[in-house]
Image (cartoon, rainbow, N blue to C red; front, side):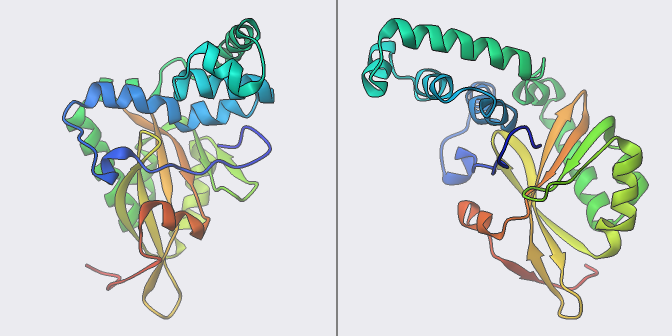
Length: 232
């Protein structure tokens, strides 16, 4: 997803850091504040509006505290917040990823993710494409390239992505499901780390965002390489 001058990186979900997560509904709703769509939309805001929105709605400072930190007035802070909220409403999807996951339910979500993982590791193009929406987007930050629509995503999968074996490890980031994706290196049997996050819509996958920066491994405590047989 490239919606601004820089690519966004995924953030580790709190449950992978040992936080209690007995009640999924409020947890998903809180995490929507750092979902990729939300963070991407922030890039369209002027600096002051972006700062006010983060301080007020994400970090939950009061208007007076925000004004003091920014050297502004409470009236200016409230005005900036209103303008920022209006801009975000125009850019954010009608249904959030948190709501999509709750609507799908745990059982069906797990079934969808298992089918994705199986198709990806088996390099089964048609099986994976069947899980995608017609207008699916495939991006590869930080590369300035993306593919839109089932036809072009299928072609890219068949001609490039599935030329080599992959192994996947489930993870969560920005309140969304994803995988640490390891691609095999020719001739040595080692799988090198990449990463992918999935956007959901209506029980299907509407976005595949594959973050290629090796530095991301430090955020998730992932091994840079895996070594196992191609056929398990």
